[in-house]
Image 1 (cartoon, one colour):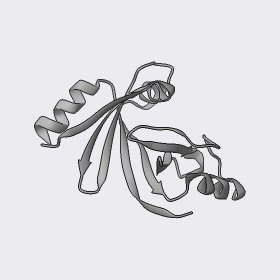
Image 2 (cartoon, rainbow, N blue to C red):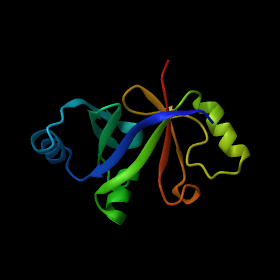
Image 3 (cartoon, helix red, strand yellow):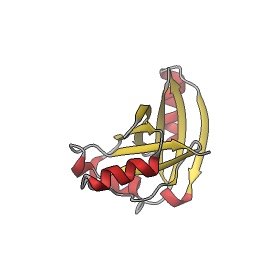
Length: 135
């Protein structure tokens, strides 16, 4: 697998507007994009810190993945995302290595990305996302 960078760090929040205020007013960062992804049942906000993005995730449905995460664990670090050169190839490689995946095929993500997740049980308890910029 060809990991080229940390793409972003995902943080689950209960209230996106409140979280954006904290990142902007307290940390001095600037939100450059807010996006809703119905398939993922989330609304997101993005910030750049050097070459790495911070993605805040608010659930739009308590039964969605982020809603369930917050119910079980509360707000906080949700996932780490790695940028790869070829997402489909990376998923095939992981499958051959019998790594438990949440997504066997790429799906639409935010910020012009195709994404897929590795199950936390296969990654030392960390939800791990692989991303590739859409062409």
